[in-house]
Length: 480
Figure 1 (tube, rainbow, N blue to C red):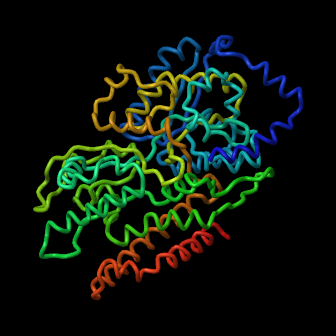
Figure 2 (figure 1 turned 135 degrees about the horizontal axis):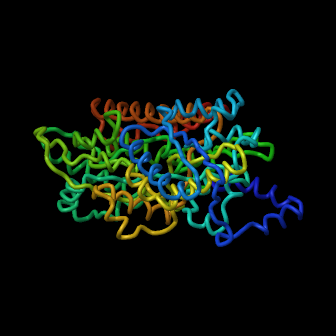
């Protein structure tokens, strides 16, 4: 959603010459040293981590307090607020003035949609962290991740740990399919068109395994998050879906052609049984061998099954394959980025500066250790070293990290909705597409069970009409 910054950047160009000259005097990395406090200072950091994630964060913070913090007379205390929802409520209290400075933290984990509305209306309670970072320091971050933190022309959120979406496969099953069907290869999973062809081949291959039961083939892959697919494919085709005008007002930019295309791209093969969904999560479907793979979060590799149920419901070991997010034909390589960042609440200048010193240390100096411990990707722009790879105990996590970082460096990485009630819109979008897929598959099966061939059933499905209906439902979800 980098295009959304264009409106604000254009406005920023109209600033006075004195502002520009002020920016030119910004210190360089070599000029600035972390501040040493004359008196002991306590900084409070809010987050929503629990269990193992909280334990590892606490260990890192203790390391900071014993080393860099001790040098600067700074102690960081971290407090989990329980859940993302609990943290959101706490941040809302702070930003809407319902609490006082004594209760307010110095720093907090935050998602863009938690703070963007307040920034548009009243940005005094959050620190523009870009003012505390030199150009050299900003360059140390992955720029795609950094982009999400800009609201207007100011940087309010620094990335902490990120995930993207990847195609995760039961590699053992995939190898069996490719060996039996040499006309296909793993390169066929790089784009949606060839992926659909492979999925059709997989469906027919599994159908032929039971010649006495026609039409019982297995779906090849499934999407874990339909709303993310909607967002990523819109951006791939060139639509931001919405933007903010110069007054900060939300403007919806739905493109009918794009919405219909992304719908049919997944809907048609789904109705034919080439793609599928059964349980709550696609990883559950893979574990039951309902699917051979799924598109899901790169962080989910930590939970990717080591074994799956075979035809006799016996558990058999498998290997995991990791592939990039499929590309839409003729469009830019695009995938979603997810993960919380860190905001700084505006306290005293000394506290703000000390908070930034800690955040730099946490996100860059120790960013790999923190991110990899949670199966997330570090936000530094620097490549992973062999020493860092050796720190990762799980081969699955390392494989996901490497694939995710490679994708992040070559793809357009976009982020989710950030407007008011965006969570509800995402949920409605996900439910709307999920229901359409389920009903479409059932309609297709009813036609086949009624005596039609699969080809005749496809002709009778009125796919264009279904796409038109979906587009109208999407418009309604966005309030148009």
